[in-house]
Amino acid sequence: MFAGPKAGLRPIYDKLIETGFSMGTDVKVCPAKTIVPFYRKHVFAQIKPSTRTRIDMGFALKGVRITGKRLAQTSGAAADDRITHAIAITRLEEVDEEVRKWFRTAYERDE
Image (cartoon, rainbow, N blue to C red; front, side, top):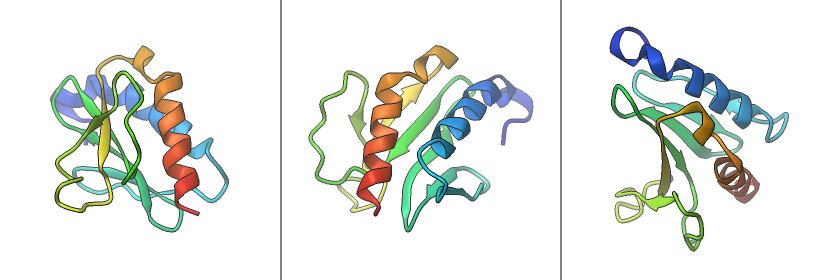
């Protein structure tokens, strides 16, 4: 997934994986060909390398009011998908408090 042109995204991916596992001991990750979903009972978040320079960090936040600066509704909200919101991440420094806040919110909603 991070070979070739997307190799520069690997440090961001590694930080997001670390952040996801820090939510709790019951977090599972199951990498697929194009996404890396985080599970508890259901998928509550996912990493999607969308371009060579951007990861879209998606969250299952159906019905949650957007209050962050970077959190955006995805087309999944209209399609009734689990992943309804995302934050675009292009630099390691963007894995910040806002990302951790929405990770925590999505994790806690999947009890």
